[in-house]
Length: 142
Image (cartoon, rainbow, N blue to C red):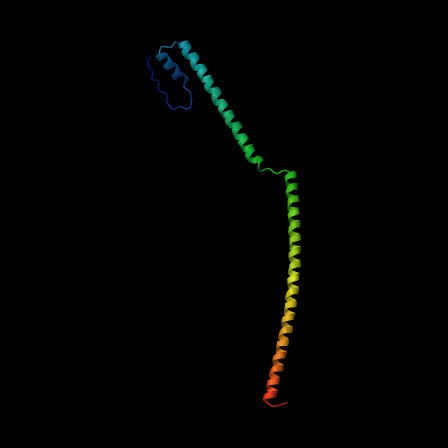
């Protein structure tokens, strides 16, 4: 079995005449060479067109899938709105709880302030009494 070297260039388009010449050089009849060239050209056209169509279809599908995730329906918006309203209500309740806790702390601060004032006044009164007693004894006022 012999090997036949056929040189192909990187042409974008199938050259029918060149193909026929190559077949004729190998000893194929003119009719058979032309028929094969026409059929091969037909197959290439079908494949090319099919590839273009397939590529266009795939591109359209990919584009549709990419955008399908981005689309939001009114139903989606309604669900999101309800979820947000629930979350807002929870936050409002938490704020109210914090406000009540702040009020309790304020009352405790006022109460502590009053107790501190009473304690300070008592200490000052006791110290003043002690001081006056010491002075009275030192000056022999009694």
